[in-house]
Image (cartoon, rainbow, N blue to C red; front, side, top):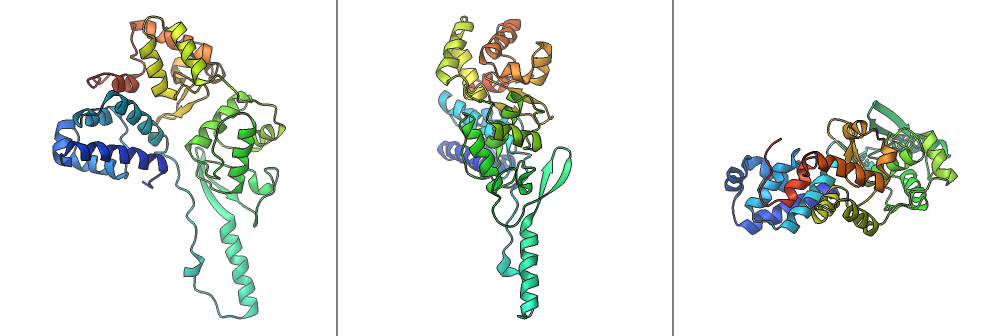
Length: 323
């Protein structure tokens, strides 16, 4: 697994807890119910556990506080989204390529060959492998043929322009030219708001919608979200706010993919299955008022937060039992 920024942060937090405990991997593994070698991989950033409960148990064994558990869950959720992301295209070290004899025609051919190699990139999409070409030089706009398909794992000027257009659509996003999990979430949310298939890939239709500038991603502030949660969850407002903050950082447009291909939507991260049960859609789930009311209906079934096992575990003093 290629280490990413979020994975590094998650691993650093695990290492801090491990070092603070003063115990070795084997001992902590026995106490946490996981092998010492697995803990070593997690703390080294070589892999991310698929089940948060493993992380929670390890943290509790290390004496993590409630605040540290909440922070650790958020770091795990972000690292987990990057688990299946294709690594960025590695840059070729042209200095390592043996040059042909220094004849003028050979040099001209080699220059063209370098440009051809640099222009090709392979991007892994849900439907398979798609070849995406980049014209030599910087693309002037997304309307240029060199930026027709932009997707997860790319890092170039085309991605930067997508991020800039999303920023103009009234959402917070880093313009860093890197199509990572943050950009994937924002693109997916934009597509839902624009009435487009939520593919997470900037295709022709998404590109046109971005350029028209008619779709706004402006939404409620975290303070407004918290206020509404307290109004709806009168029975246990503090826990409800903590669960929502754990699930989505109180972001009404938050999207999180699951390992089975489904996705969770909005403030309380309502799953695709739960949306169907409540006659909802991703667009409805992005309405914070609807999302919070839907979450309260789920809570009312057993009058607890069993639909959010990971966040519930992060809030409790003991690990939640396996469901």
